Length: 365
Image (cartoon, rainbow, N blue to C red; front, side, top):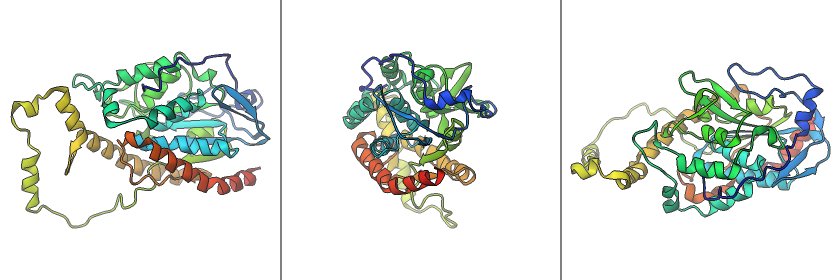
């Protein structure tokens, strides 16, 4: 998928997490209808758990199992890297991860030992380099085919499967047609991550297990429920869109004015070149121009508005035990070239939450 994804995966021996080992001692959690859940999913108590990064396992003292629910948010998702780095450095490495969209990508790379590669690639992104990964097409079911990105992802993760991961992990996706929430917890990791970030209208959907799947943020933007079902006792959620103040209000009186006519004239295509300008023109339309949104902005913003409403509703009924909310309001959803800033903001947000996380874990212990 990315330039950082150029090295082959380190497969090694299959690792089984302590949470999975406990599944033989505790009853399995009932799966949600139409969700693909692991056969060994179970509630867990206080367990001695190990943290895995780059293939190394280290044991930590007994404590309640921590589940990390990483939300969607497009380019803002690089903040998850900073959150993970800070949690791990302070002894709160997750024992379970559930991720949606970009959250699935970051969480999956962490679980597979490729977080360093992801961060290195993200920090070198520019607008020009981003365009190099976008294979535009009007013939498919998405504006971007996604084959260039998917190929890079598969080259690195190879045939790594979920049962080879050292910790339980779930990528959330949505089934086209039924709207079912799909918890991808078995099979090939690379395909699951691709399905979870397949933003409708932008990326083509992914076919897995007889189902066509797209971005999981349509149904579960911050997958707290999945992290809990995978066996964690303490759930830490990361919401990338909480800092977007002033959204979702009602403007009770509004209408047109004289400036509208000038704007309509400015956005009309001029001649055949404006209509059939090829891939270069399509890329310009994708980003937009000063004063008006491009195709990507319209699609992503519409998706984000819906995601924000769903997140509020789901967290009201099933809240996390601790929520980390990076202050990402100044970063756009397609600002992938600002990864360093997003990572720093995520690290700072996690740092502010450390004391409260410790208190929550102590309360469960």
